[in-house]
Amino acid sequence: MPGVLAWVPGVDPGRLVHHARLAGDADAVLRHGQVAGDSAARQGAHREAARHYRAAADHADRLPEPQRAELLERYASEAHLTGRNEEALQARETALTIREALGQPELVGENLRWISRLSWWTGRVAHARDAAARAVAVLEAGPATRQLAMAYSNQAQVHVTTHELDEAIAWGERARSLAEQLGDDATAIHASITVRTARLAEGDPGAPAALEKAHEWASAHGLVDHAARALQNLAMVTADELAEYAAAAPLVDRALHYEQEHDLDGTYLYMLGSRAKLRLERCDWSGALADADATPVRSGRRRGGAAEQWHRPPCGGGGEEPTCPTWTHPPKHTARAMSPVSTTPTAPTMATSPTSPRSHGPAGGGL
Image 1 (tube, rainbow, N blue to C red):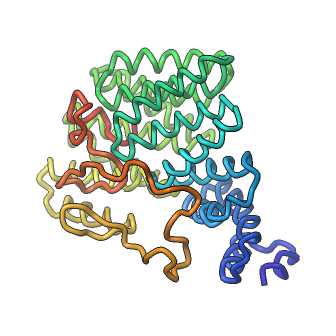
Image 2 (image 1 turned 30 degrees about the vertical axis):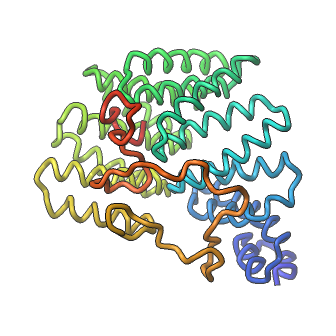
Image 3 (image 1 turned 135 degrees about the horizontal axis):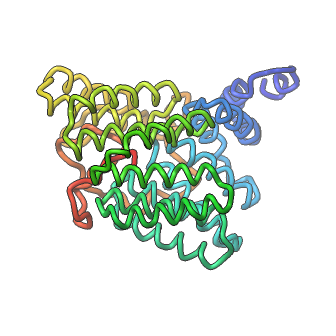
């Protein structure tokens, strides 16, 4: 069937992936999965893109090593946007191994930077710090590049999550300066959001307007993840650091609406859990409970005692989507602390880490 449909003009590549999987045609899944994933990603359909890339990634060992690494990197980016941070981390770690073997330092640094970010999202703060430092070291050995500017910006993020605000501002300004020299607007706005977040936590009265401006600019230029981050950070610093609950409530709702509108499940789920916390602070018991209950349901999880477990069929089960990644070994870090009161399935709770000097950084997961 997929071979016949492939010759039909205008056929949806996602349909070809579906039939190729049912037919057990691994080569067709690999071929059409990449095309379908690329198409969905361009349209901002991140859940669909992640699903197609994952189907293709299960057969990535059929590709030459450079193309295999590229596919895993594309999958990891979409998986992160949809809240599958554990799988994204596994894919990035495998891609890193390949890039190191190929002797590609810029892509080694890029993967280390992503491993840092994903390690933070999965509760591995020490690993996040280590990978961030390694990314900078690798990239500083070469010429000034966009990857180096983003590695600096990631260092700023690592510091702001642990409330090291002076360091966050210094690294963020360094990233922004380099990005502007390179004409890299996306990295410049990314760094600017981190700097403004830190300044907001310090009480800078001009920071809210600066974050609003960053949101508008990023959204207008199609950088929806940066735009969402600006809104989310503004909302959560206002709530958590400044304790201005009434002002924070509409900001949280705006962030949730934007993230839902743009298929950003990972940050949407974080904000849903954060809104539960905010409602609890405001004594809105029923609203807090509704958000807390909705978070694991929307994430595809079910409650299971002190921790929540994936609500998926076993490996090889008959679901539409593959249930276990096969492109790499199981994650190296399988045990991590979980807060017994956490309602957030995709972001770490900073209080669980002995390496954090503070129970949380400003704005939590969007930093």
